[in-house]
Length: 93
View (tube, rainbow, N blue to C red):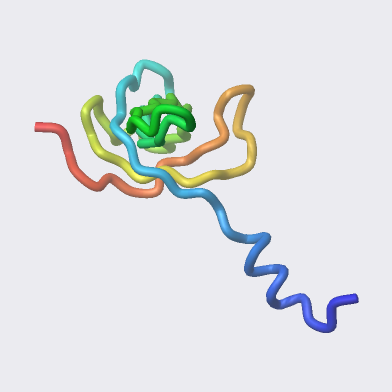
């Protein structure tokens, strides 16, 4: 049995954080963010880009398409929405 729970709480409270580009803002209070990860192919060792589209909660509808944003994991907001926009890193020109 663990003697102190302080270490477990720190591990349990950590949330995933990703950076990506906003590709759609057509929904109300929701933005679709494309996050690109670079992975190596297991057999051929070639570097590949894997893109995943995340639905992120945007309370004030203040992001636009093309913005670079940071998103953090959160509790489910809807059927597909499990992320929220933390801050805007760079505005689209």
